[in-house]
Length: 188
Length: 113
Image (cartoon, rainbow over all chains, first blue to last red; front, side, top):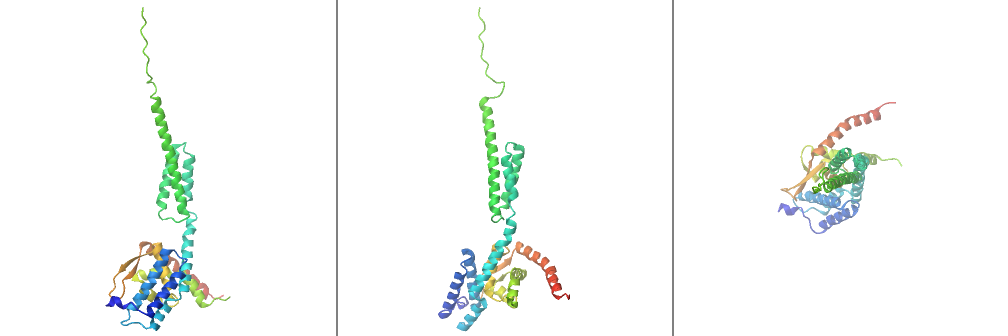
């Protein structure tokens, strides 16, 4: 029975539904998942508060509860302010992160003719970027992707060059193993 | 336009209230209405209980709290918020900075010329 008690009916429920619909509309600037999360949490807050009554709450009590939650405009303003701040803060560091792996991976590509330098550079920058990309946000995430692409390109070029060299050597055969033509013995 | 004490408080709350939520969760998991009840005891911290929920959604997105749904004897199942290791570290950093900062502000406000 207690599980049913938190549900109001009639005009009170309409009041709550209208408040939640207005809230959803006011939060339209947020990402859909975040907006749905907030609306569901506010609904849960209301249901929990109403479940504390051992009778049907009056319209005045429901209005007081919605008043304590605040106007939907106020909630939306606070949500927008908070979203701005949380987006700004990580970007301060994100705006600097990711350049070093890009530079090192680019250098490895330029120096591909010197494999003893290019391979460690490409591996190091590629692995560092792959580790960092998990916790990175844009635009740093994009830079880590570029670094990984450059590193893979360097390693691929070196691999293909190596294959080409090996194939070239094997087709020309080992030095000093040229077939010897047999010379017929002089007659007479 | 001169600021009112309400608008000054609203400005100061930004960026601080989230650490008050984390500080409350340091004592253990808590659900939305309970957190709202604790914070709204002091109107300078929380004037509209509904503004708590976008903040909790952000804290969850940042990985500073995590949620789990638990059945309740009274009413619907409740979403409990728990402090994560990252959240505890963020709270620690805030606590370390807050002491000297608040002392400096108090000192300069009360300092006679």
